[in-house]
Length: 327
Image 1 (tube, rainbow, N blue to C red):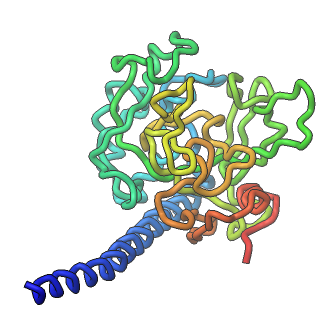
Image 2: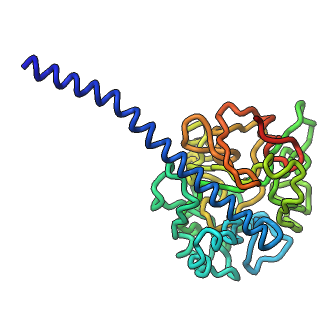
Image 3: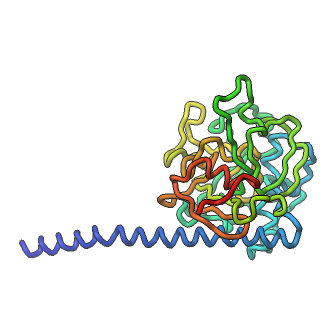
C-alpha cells in the first residue's frame, strides 16, 4: 500500500512538472501562428498597395454616399474585404455583394464565414459568433443601451481578432476647460489615411471625405509605423483581463462592430489616451498572449510589444510622423 502511494505521489509530481511546460509550448505555438496571421495580412497590404497605389480604404462599397453619418460608418465593407483575394479568399470575396450594405441580408452568409487568417488561435473557437449592428433600425434607437438592443436589430458575424487602428489619442494635461476630448486635434493619425469630418470631432460628426493611406504619407518610414494590431476578445468588452461591466454596460458588450466584414467608426478605431498594451480591447491593443501582443509594421514585419510598453512609445509607433519603433 505504501509503495502504491509513493508511485501515485511520484506520478502527481511529474504531471505537475510537465503540465506547465506543455501549456507553455502550446501557447508558444499559438503566438507563432498569430504572428504568421499578422504577417500574411501585412503582406496582403503590401500587395494591395503595389496593385492599387494605396492601402485598402476603411470604407468600401455600398450605396451610401458621403457625407457619411456616424451610424453609416458601421455598415460599409471593411478594410479586410479588399484583402481577401490576396489571402487566398477570392471565392469568399466573390460571394460579397459590394453594392449592398455589409450588414445587409445579402451579405449575412459571407459574414458568418470564418477567415482563419483573421482569427488568433489563443482566442475563442472560430465557431463562436459575435454580433453586429443592423443599419435600417439602429439609427432610430438613439441612446438605447447595448444590452437592450433587441435581437432583430442585430446580425450574426464571425469576429476578427486583428484590426487596423487609425491613430492614437493624446490629450493635453491639464485638459483645457470646455474642450472636446473627441476632437481630431488630439489625434495623431497613422498609416491608414486622411479622414475629414464636418465638425472637428470623431464622435457624432459626419465624415465628409476619406482618402486611403499611401506609403508615401508615412514620413517616419514603413519600418517605424504600426499598420495592424491584435484586438482580441470581442464581442465582450474587456478591461485588464476582465469584462468591462459598468452601470451603463452591465453585459460588457463591445460598442463597435465585431465581425471581419463590416466597417467601424473612427471613434472605435483610435487608441484611447493613456491606454497601453493589453489594457482595453475596445480602445487599444489587446491579446490573450502572456506578456504582450503582436503588431504588424507597415514594412510587412511583425513585432511583439510587451505589456510594459510605455504610452509615449505607442504614440511614436502609431503616428506616421512621430518617431519609430524602439530598439
